[in-house]
Length: 308
Ligand code: RBF
Ligand code: MG
Image (cartoon, rainbow, N blue to C red; front, side):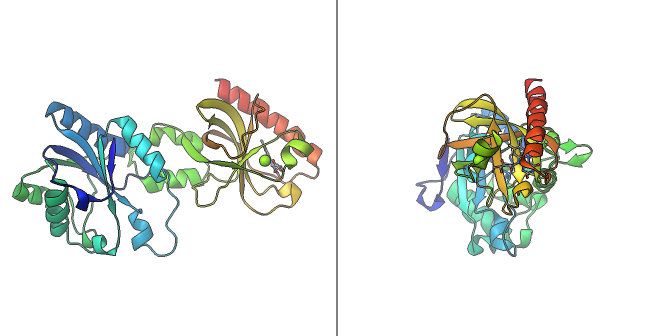
């Protein structure tokens, strides 16, 4: 898969591009349906399957204050898109200039003259151009004018509602990780580098943990979870605690994973943590021994879930 970051450097527009367009945070089942249609059309018509997206996420340019953390940070989004079969990604810099383009100029200057689109697949609710004025009907009209086709796909429904990134984000924030695969087609996953924690888990409790900095990440609600970690290419079962370690009077949010049947030193290595099931709330225990007893029970419960 090729990623084009600067469309001004293209020598000529693409002759045969079938593309979808959007932010695709989460690469959820609705997004996957759009990409699936692109890939099928490309296969049927000897086209090239592409995708147009924006970076940074428009919410961080248009919104007020910090944007919501992403379900899929850029590199994970690219990995998922590549795995689905997209061959070329156009990553447009989303800045104030792009935000204020009229829908007509966006289509003519960017889609037609720079990128070159033969067919565009969008979601039923796609809006584009200044103030989101452009919609599927306008894109079809402009396609007629400039010679490209447009498919606007119906939403993918789960529990009678269209799958949307904002709803998925809320499920994660609420800790409903078991519900996520129905929307994403996979478990929710957080990646990061293993950092030094308080070194209390191993020495004092007998349950060493790999700590991942939760800053700027979309982190499930505080609590204990059965997880599957990926350490390099190795899948390792684990039990994670997200919270503030109230038993020890700490007060910063940590994400830490106790890996099962594993004892290698992995400081500074990249790991991903997939959240399979929520086990309980984080609690303040009156002694470390009570916490140890509880963690033993958590490990047993996690083993049962992970071996199912
Ligand atoms: N700390 C708490 O204060 N309350 C908890 O309920 C709690 N549950 C945990 C569950 C698991 C499976 C693990 C690995 C840790 C948990 N901890 C909890 C965090 C513990 O305090 C922490 O790992 C050590 O203090 C080292 O940072
Ligand atoms: Mg630790």
